[in-house]
Length: 347
Image (cartoon, rainbow, N blue to C red):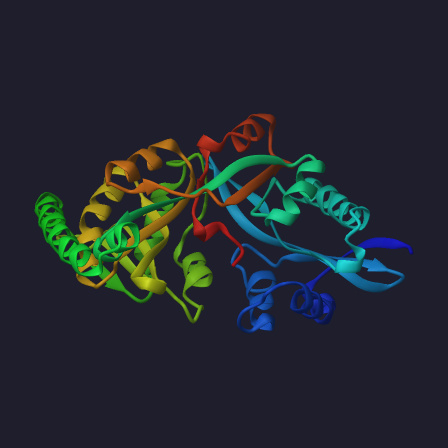
């Protein structure tokens, strides 16, 4: 059998992509809409697709979505690798390596940097090709309602629920007391959409974290607000000017969990945001709150200072410097330089 990797676009690869992804991945929702979203509609530009062919029949695929990342004060064009699939009977190793070598050559010559969140099966392939493992996304969690947690740990449902209610009331009183200082000048504004204030915040944040994707209004609307599971926006605003200081994108999940799928603001603003947000989520009935992050250790320290516990690191992040300068490449390889949240993934 003769294998070859072919670079193409969504229009020409659409039918093959739909078939390959449907047959080889667990895909939820409208796959055609997802492909248009990821490879055609992104604010940073259209993506590309590699098809792996065996005797002209598509037997694998690998996608390249486009993001704009700021490294210091310079915007870089980044390739986000996605949708890596090879049909089961062609998973001997060599076909996947052949396709991923073609992808790596292409992105190294066409993009300033490459990053990805490969699944467990793909990690070995990308490591073999020379991508650097940056680290794993850590999940930080904070319990808001303790009854179910205590019951899972100790049993005795009636006693643990009563104890949980007492703990909840005491902890909530402390949280509310801590809101008094930031509440003098700041408040949470719950929103369903973004506005020009998010553009101004994105401009102000350039260079604050050494490597971060631009999060302007258009990018946030594209990334989160076209989804049926769109998050609600907790915007931290100044009471006098109504200017945006920070935001959290919050999505409800099973069991009353509140998932923070993105945060942005300087460290002081993020601290004030968490002080106001946690009791607000409790009042909204959530049982716990979680946030996934990899990067700047100041953010990890901030989360721990706000009683978020580090849980299971579960998604590998890989990177490679393409057209970036040698100085930029050194920064790209440093996990402490990044600011990565669920925002950065391809789903």
